[in-house]
Amino acid sequence: MKKSRALELLGGSVGAAARSIGRISSAAISQWPEDLPPRIEDRVLAALARKYLPPEMIGEASAAEGRNGGGAHV
Image 1: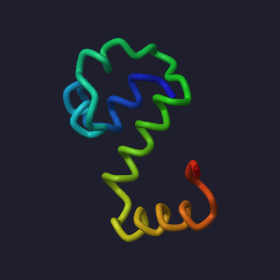
Image 2 (image 1 turned 45 degrees about the vertical axis):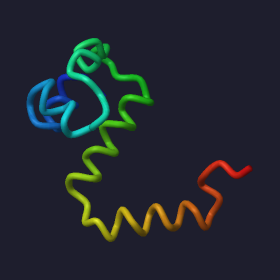
Image 3 (image 1 turned 90 degrees about the vertical axis):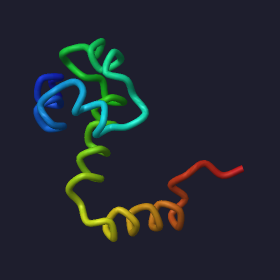
Image 4 (image 1 turned 90 degrees about the horizontal axis):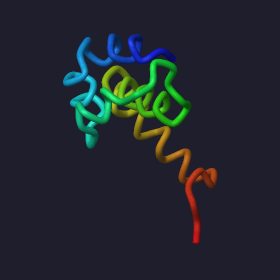
């Protein structure tokens, strides 16, 4: 994903993207490369899921992940 596309999807500006993703500064987003690496693309997609998917769908995904061993177990 291109940085410009991510910014467009997250509100059209660096500030809007930072608010959408949460826990990231505008300065950090300004330093993103134009071709986003998978870890940043995943954060963009997660922010879009939180914004557009119904809460019950997100909750179901989290619950299924826990049942299927999706998280780290000690």
